[in-house]
Length: 75
Image (tube, rainbow, N blue to C red; front, side, top):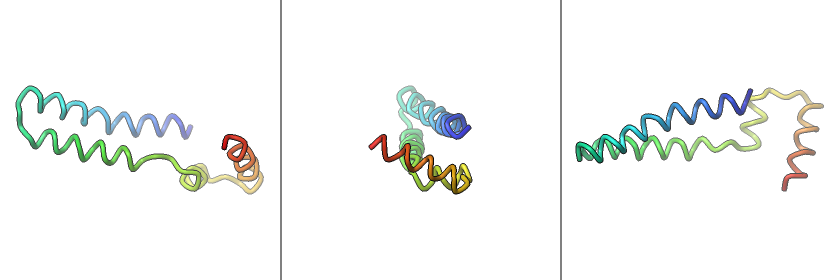
């Protein structure tokens, strides 16, 4: 569920950003490019972190222990 929500959130930000880039290339209006840049910056801030994932998923202590063990194996 976390992955689906994350992908949906990024897609809803990415669509208008791509539209802004295309609108800039067609129209030449710099405001479209600025809006696209702001949206792309917001996308970079949405990077999932370990703390954020634990908070969003509301894990129990047992689930958190399993997650931490799996997370350490990935490093």
